[in-house]
Figure 1: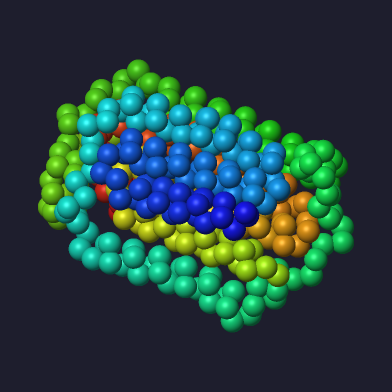
Figure 2: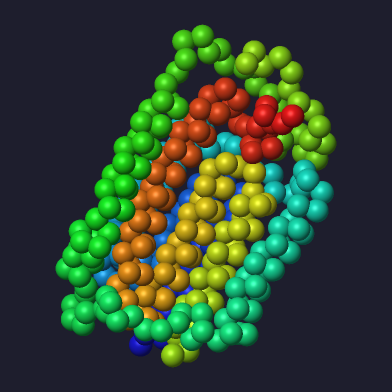
Length: 200
Length: 101
């Protein structure tokens, strides 16, 4: 049963991931991302990480993707990427090569040294508790062993909120620059043209 | 060691590779942020898998911190995207060249 669930979710996750990077329309990318995140949430459930599955759905699909979609709509969704042109020659081939090398390197580590060598010895300090999830155990760990990192995340979130507010403040003297033709409209023009006199 | 555990790790590696390729290929900054999310999720999956393989709760605790960092990253990243888009509507990652030498 676990194998069956894994196979279905693996297909969903990979299809969603592929959809993110090949969709012309950014909205379709965001929806593919939702599929991927849901698949990963089910994979968490499959591995007895019930709390993480719930948090994954709430935080990622409920907050982050909605935020991305919101900004997408705010900026206008008419900015389809023209995926037929390739402004940087050889960019896709090199990127594909880099991806294959990256995945190949990780898999090679697993194959050459064996997964046992990668993971090391089993834990004796914080073993997983049996039973219906380990939510209480995660809470205990978070508020005892990891209480300082937990406080640091509070500081990090505060800084992020302040940063977002500062970034979105509109300077009084800011005039919108006359619209430059973006790379997507220029097709395969060279990248050497730097817009001059932006008034910065 | 079960074969399924290895399958989780392979899936996670492939998903990470997909996100990395997307980050290198796409030019829309929002899609690039989504690709970063893909990579973060791939790593989360491998954390949970390793945690279960090692019978250790720390794998799941770390995922929490990754989630928080991902949320902070998205907030600041989207703020930057909006700030850039306000000055240069329709800008892609290739158009943001003001800091280039």
